[in-house]
Length: 259
Image 1 (tube, rainbow, N blue to C red):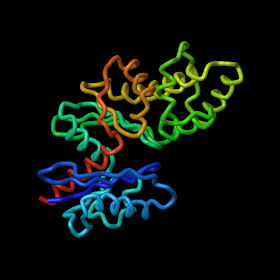
Image 2: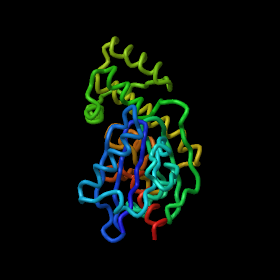
Image 3: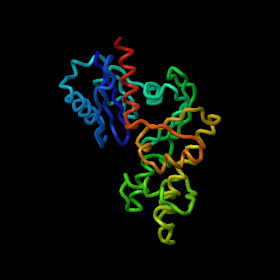
Image 4: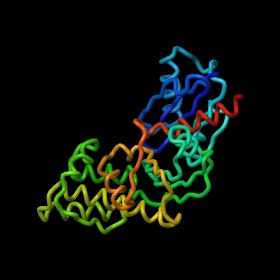
């Protein structure tokens, strides 16, 4: 039985095929762009092409993400928090706390042994501490996005980015550059600011419960991961492709509906 999950986010869209017996069959990650409806259709077509299947071969499709309503081909849409919880529970059955930092929001989710959400906190009113925040800072510093994490690990000073607003933080970063601060120290300050902002959400939940899993595109930034581990005083586990967790959870929900 073949099912699919599609996660339409603000920056990227992920489509994933799941087989009842084989598990994950394949997945694709695409830039969402201006037309999320078209991107969702393209992502599904692309992931189906790998095993040589068509939409008619898929028993059930669940969509998730901020653009989930744009996937007309999906039989059901489910919130990303529920899907992330399902996906993490499949990959890490011992997980109890999930940190998901996406393109436009940060979510901290507590789940039980069956992957059910017990409580969560979410920052969705400001881009500070999200993937968009990281992109803006990388652009301001003229550094490739996929390199800023490694560079920040070379820091010698612990600079503080005090502003929580993306616009003001960018101005603060530019000021640090003009003052002659080293790039790696500035990047560390940026990552520490993200970690501190995430810690605020975690504290509202009363702290973490082991094990802690990180998902979302920002989980690929080793600088943010290390900064989080430091403020949490805890190790964080990450799947080899942390961006597919939501789509995986959607596919697992599809399987439950199709059976």
